[in-house]
Length: 319
Ligand code: NAD
Ligand code: UDP
Image (cartoon, rainbow, N blue to C red; front, side):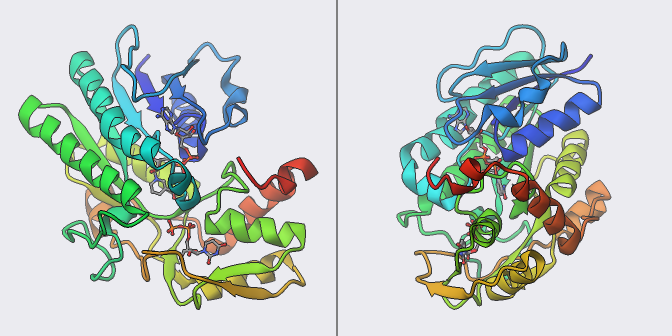
């Protein structure tokens, strides 16, 4: 049985990756310090012989006994309000944490895939964003703690690849949504749906003309899986190119949820990228991957998930 270590296992993406690898017959070692994650995302796996969980901060030396075939490094705060609240931990997990995991990959002769992000393109001057674009990031702005840590993570990963021959993969993930996102994590999908469910107004930041392109979790997991199994070591964008303005998106959520509330406008956070859309030519050509689930279908699934949460869960404002 092949063995895979997944960091950030109790988070949104990590928990779905655990499910996917369990389903495909792998032995899965989940690791998480629970800083933004929740054990309830993986508690359905605890009784399985194929699964073990390590409550551990990957910024401290990472020890795993036995062999490892694959490492997927997904530990990191991922929502702007999280990484603004815990900026130093955000910088550490993608730098020191990545260093520890690359060291582990080298020791175990394991293939490692690291979770990078569209944020490495910053507020992009090229549209749509392809992998050749170097990005436009403010190193000292509030989002820099996330963006620069991820850029450093990519450099470190390529250095281990070039100088130590470690078998590496880098996925640049564009805005992904689905069940198990934290309703109060501030990202726009849970934010708007939570507001609709609580009967609050929908808060559009800025004038809502900024754009994003939302990818459903199952498509994202399939793209990551294909990249891991490929022999391609340069970064690859995985995301859904179907772009929308945030104002249109708010109207879409109002229609879906049937909320009677109105849209209110709040200030645009500093360095909030004005446009974002992945160029997925490489993913199509190299991985034979493209997203299959359209937004209407995906949003319905995630709305049903949020509707099924308890009233206490729905009212929770802080993690
Ligand atoms: P999440 O907050 O749901 O999950 C992150 C997990 O990492 C949490 O369970 C958290 O407790 C854990 N973690 C954080 N620091 C840790 C540490 N030092 N040691 C051990 N565990 C730690 O976020 P997510 O949306 O699932 O994102 C997962 C990964 O994907 C992140 O690396 C993020 O940067 C990347 N990503 C996500 C998106 C997206 O749209 N969801 C987009 C781009 C990149
Ligand atoms: N956004 C918004 N209202 C909210 C939360 C977010 O208008 O209540 C906007 C935010 O300013 C950004 C977009 O939605 O332009 C996506 O935000 P998110 O935090 O989901 O992701 P990111 O900015 O990291 O792409």
